[in-house]
Amino acid sequence: MKIQVSIEGVTYEVAIQDLNARPVIVEVDGQVVEVYPEESGNAPAKVAAPAPKASPAVKPAAAKPKPAAAAPAAGASVLTSPLPGTIVSIDVKAGDAVKKGDGLLTLEAMKMKNVIRAEADGVIADVHVNQGDLVKHGQPLVSFKG
Image: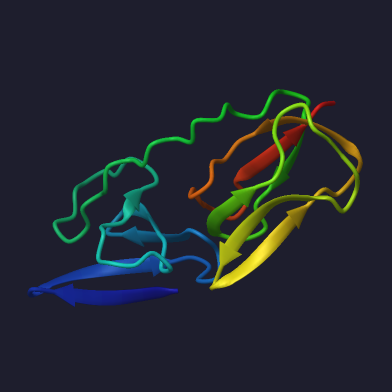
């Protein structure tokens, strides 16, 4: 969807991709930004790609720090976040054996707590999030030994 937005007398062409995706990818006069509508406040959007020109109405935010956990190992099976939210509890650690259906962690999204469960029997290789982390849809949560 393309729209025209006027801010302080300056008109910008805004192209919005899928409004249901997280983050929402928006292009403002050639500059691509990620928008997280659920986040409160008026924080500026995050830059998703380098822009050919700067736009005075869109100021990229500083990058958020990465989680303390390491990235998934090559060849490991990875369980990703089914939706954006906040990690409220983690019930496993690296080396734990889990059975299909066991609760691994709890993700709060839209004021509802969702238990994220193991999809198969396995052994936890690593937990890639910390309690209190804000996670995106598709972000790695837990990896299993191959």
